[in-house]
Structures are given as structure tokens and as C-alpha cells.
Image: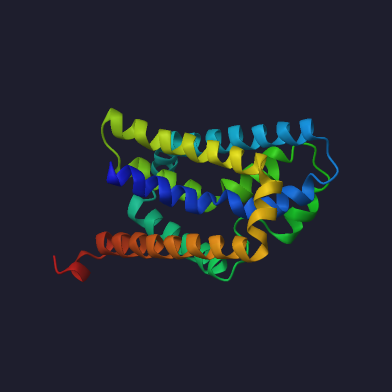
Length: 209
């Protein structure tokens, strides 16, 4: 159960729904409440679908391209470390959304899916984590717990975006920055674990084996 809680916390930290609040508020300014609610539902559902599909098909893609899980651990760890570094500075990582994507999003009708759900919420970091988890998980109930984590994170993203206005007003810019930095610290530690674990398997002599 502790592993489930740790994975859930890690996935939530990478998805980081709080980081999407400013973008969501900017893209939906002036929209009726009903339309904003529709977009939040789209985002939550899309996040769950993206994470689930990554978990179910990721290992097949790795085999197709002859990529080992350990190599993905190192690459994913570096990617997550970059995101964590940006979060520690209270910034949005470019791996989540580039300025060009943000500008293009203003012209999109389905902003709940692109760019909010992907890449802003379910971006490369969370997709990498789901693929790595698929390679490390055995047993029906363990697989079910991973998918439950994806559902809970998607549900939390929907709830947080639904309450984006009150949350932004309550926390303020300083509160949002503190929350982002705390999640960034968690991600940095997790990224180091991924990198050292992957390198240890690729170069077993480093572990004294």
C-alpha cells in the first residue's frame, strides 16, 4: 500500500494540476460557467485516457523500437529532472507547453484536450512514468492499483480545474509558487532514483555486481 501511495503522489506531482490553473483561467476567460465545466470534464477524461493508453501500450512501443526499460528510466529521469528544476523556480517546464503551443491554443476549440490535457497535464514526464510502471508491475491487483492511481489523478485534475478560480484567489501567486516548488522537490528526488536505478542496471559494475 505504501508503494501505491508513493506512486500516486509521484504521478500527481508530475501532472501537477495546480500548474494548469493560470493557463486554464487565461484560455477560458469570459466563457460561460457551463462551457468551462465542459472543458474541465474533457480535460479530466483525456488525462485518464492518455495515462491509461500509455500504461497499456508503452511496453509494446519499447519492444518495437528495441528500447529497454532501463534506458527509458534514465531518459525519463532526465526529463522529469528538467521539469523539477523548472518547478523549483516556480516556472512551467517547456516540456509541458512551449510559448508557441500556448499561442496556438487560443485558436483551438477543444482546449480541454489540447493543450490542457496534453501536454500541459499528461505530458512526456507522466507518460514516461506510466510506461516505466508498466515494466515494473506484476499481478492483476498491482496493475489495477496503477490504473486506479491514473483515475484518481485525472479526477483530481478535473476537481482542481473546476475550482480554479477559488483556488487561485485563495492561494495567490505566492501560495501557488510554494506548492509548485514542493512538488518540484518531490519530482527531483524521484528523477534521481530513476536515473541511478537505470544506470545501475545498464552498468552493473557501478553497483559492485
